Length: 106
Image (cartoon, rainbow, N blue to C red; front, side):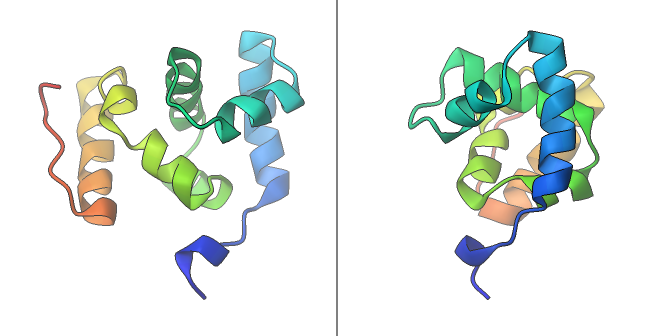
C-alpha cells in the first residue's frame, strides 16, 4: 500500500477534531474545510498546532492524510509549538519523514 492510500481512522479523527472545534467554536465541516484548503493560512497553522497538542504522535499519524501531515510538520506550524521540547520532537519527526533539514530558529 502506498502512503497516498493510507487509511485514516475517521472515528479517532472526529474525536480529536471535536476537542479542537469545541476550543475554537468551529463546526466539523468548517474544520474539514480549513484542513483541505490549498494554502497554509494562519487559521490552518493554529489548527494544526492545536491538533498536535491534542493527541499523541501515534494518533496524529492515524488521523492526518499525507498532505495534512506534511503541512502539520512544516516550519510555520512547528515554530509556534511550545514547549521547546515539543518543537524539537516534531522537527525530528519531520526530518525523518520528509528527509529535510528544518531550522531550529525558523
